[in-house]
Length: 180
Image 1: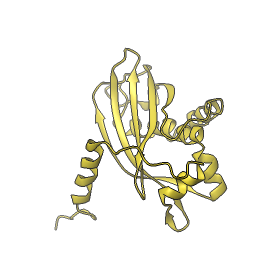
Image 2: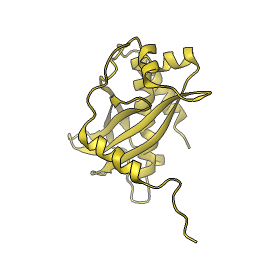
Image 3: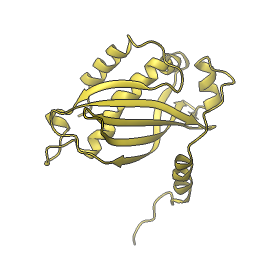
Image 4: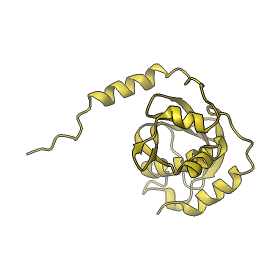
């Protein structure tokens, strides 16, 4: 089940966060609960992606994107993700999540997120290709940046490894081929 109560709590806590700049990092604290684990008593890989919402949505609040979205009638969606898992997060273990807007292009925003164990080790890292949408589809990022009061603000340079991921995605067949 989706962590609605945890999301509400995260948004309630984010209300006290000073407004963040477009690419500043939002930091939040979490715990791996029994309903987050798999049969090996560690954070389930799919649940990890769900829990990343608990960083992204409060980040959107802290940067003003949620308010702009309400004003403009926008929604938020995901168009892809690449994840690297490196350390286990065990049941009841606390961890810190770091979320930030990495860069953007004409259509998409790229959000970097990571979970850090309390001993300082990075447990996992994800980059999402995200978009702002309205009833007509994807909203151009220039329009989103303008709505955030950052008109004429250029995107930070896209890291090479993100560009390579996107190049690989462009070569991936869509829709996927079906075996016959």
